[in-house]
Image (cartoon, rainbow, N blue to C red):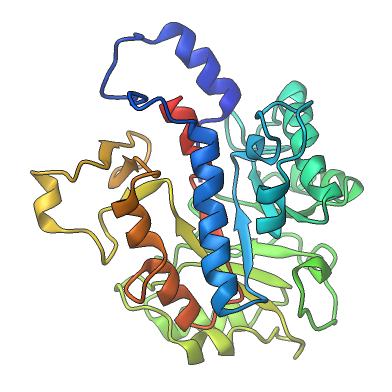
Length: 326
């Protein structure tokens, strides 16, 4: 999903009105990076307390891997120990426009942080947005050279299984029981091209990806059951794979089960402005206890639903929400 990067945010900050109170809130003086680290650590502690082998993979917001958010900072040990990997969009392609090479300086900037996480033992999952075959090939080869696992997504909405390459990059017949064993993956969270849940599940089952990231819910709002998730944990070649659930923690989505109709007119104190790039998605003060209670820590929480549905892990999105509030 397209998210504003730290570099873009800094450039925008120069040109934007500094008094735009609708877009920023730092009145309590909180350390927004540390508050996001703490949020992720809390999610990890809770989930691993229930299922010790559950994987926690934050996407973007890679600056959190150091204690001061700078590439020359000390590794943030507590954070790095709480997570099992990092997802990164647009590392090679898609930063400015899909199927367009990411500026070299941006790639270098992101890699300086990604490698800190990799060196701590975490798996790096890269999603590049490109559809020209030569660019997809380059995405796979360049990321492989850096020991990153990658997926060249042919469209940003993540509604389709790419038909190229015909044979998956690094396809293998091995059973995958640990994140560190993954050689390829697919980001496939939008099922809108499928008329039924069964059709979507069969499409997943017909693939040989080692790891698949899907949503908790099908189009009609029904959650995938534990049995359905289990059925997707077998590759077409008969080997085992991991199935990980997408979960946004830096924005609230008005199509989720937790959304209250009254919020359209009277917002909770933690609910902020709508994301103009993704209608229906709203910025949240993610450090707020009420929002965090929706996400994890109790039997009615989003994360508990993920755990109850037998996923192998959670893929956390909008980690870079701290950029909006800093």
